[in-house]
Length: 182
Image (cartoon, rainbow, N blue to C red):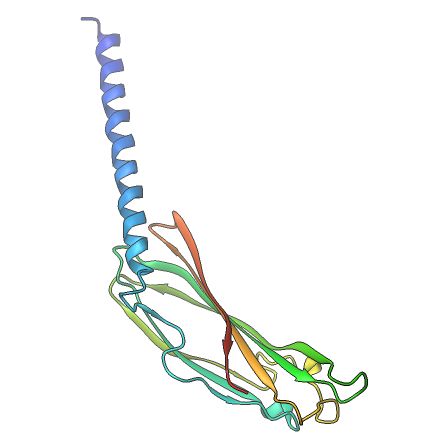
């Protein structure tokens, strides 16, 4: 047998083993990512308790929100570049004519990058915003603009995103229109 033929067989075997190992890493990483997002594991708890909010329209600079959360990395790989985004939308009836008209206004928007959560670790924290730190003060209506005979309704949107399995997967979990009460 010629040396060139032996060399080609060695390269082919190497490429086969390399391809199979990369496929195995991808499949196991995908399976592990599914275990992180499994709803029965309770590894992502947003919110992890009742949010505490102060929506005082007469003094918007003192408005505040605190949302407790915890995220446990139950997968095999680290969660990297983990971000949590939070928005609050306010629905109110206008005091000006036409009567019974309502407006939706986004009054809060904030994103925080928490970095990496290592395999098996827990991140337990509070997502918070006070005054101009997250609240969009220019969009908050004054008490004169609001018809208080109709209830004020606040909705929250959460977005949790992270990379996983050596940054092969990027996923996003959204909670849309979570009522924060009237």
